[in-house]
Image 1 (cartoon, one colour):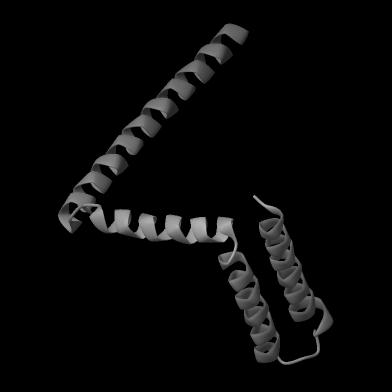
Image 2: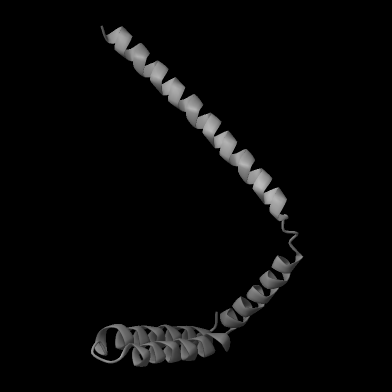
Length: 115
């Protein structure tokens, strides 16, 4: 990261921190819409600063590539989701009962040996 990108990133962090300070702490008596508008405006300014830096451009490219990949995913149908959820619920129930039985057996065995 070059010096200009460091300056932009630092400035974006300062703008965000300033917006948080003013919207959450300094303007406590102000109406909420005004505080929200100040916070959103400072976030927009910080986002614009980050966008024009190299890491910001790489992040935007990453998000665009990720959205393209998400569109390629083959999502399961409703019946598949219901069947697999049922299998998971049954498996978890069986394992819970098994562990409960093992715990009860070990507890009984320890009590028996302690006598």
